[in-house]
Image (tube, rainbow over the protein chains, first blue to last red):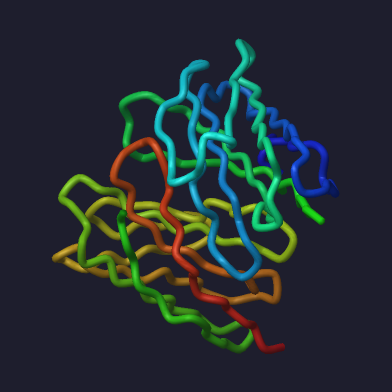
Length: 115
Length: 109
C-alpha cells in the first residue's frame, strides 16, 4: 500500500470525448508524475508536476494536460480521445527537488477504454 | 532517453535464488540505478536502488558492476508472490523514469 490513490479505477469513453483522471499523492510528497501504459509495454512518461508547476514532459501531444493543486493532488485531462489512448494511466508521487534518487510510489492506475 | 537491456523473460523455482541481469551501457556518472517491479493488475512498485556500491534491503540485493554498465537484482529466496515484471532503470534526473519492457519473472512451484 503506497498511499497513492487514483480514481476512477475503470472508465469507458467514446472517441472524441474528454476525460479527467484524478490522483491523490502520498502524504508529504510534493511531486506527481503521470505515465501511460499500453498493454504489454512498460509505462511511458507523460509529464510531472512539482509544487503546482509542470516540471518535464514526455512525447505526448498538447491534448494531454494536467494540473496540480495546493494539496499536491493532481489531475490528468485528455481531450479529443482517440482509440490509441486506451491504456492504463498511472500516477506516481515522490519527494521532488534537487535529489536524484527519485523514488516514485505508484497508484494502481486507471484503466481507460476508448470505443 | 536512458536505455537499459534486460532479458524478456526468466523462470525460477520457488525458494531458490533469482538473479535478474540488466545492461545500462549509457549510464552517466551521477545516475542512480533503480529497480521496480509490477505485479499483475497493480502499478509498479519500488524494489531497490543504488549508485556505486552493492545494496541490500528487506526485498532484495543489488549488485552493481565496477564500471556501472551492468547490474544484477538478486532475490534470495523466490516466492510465488515475486512473480512480476521487473524493470531496471537509470535516472537522468528527477523528472522521469524511463521504463523498458522489463523481464517477466515466472516462479515455478
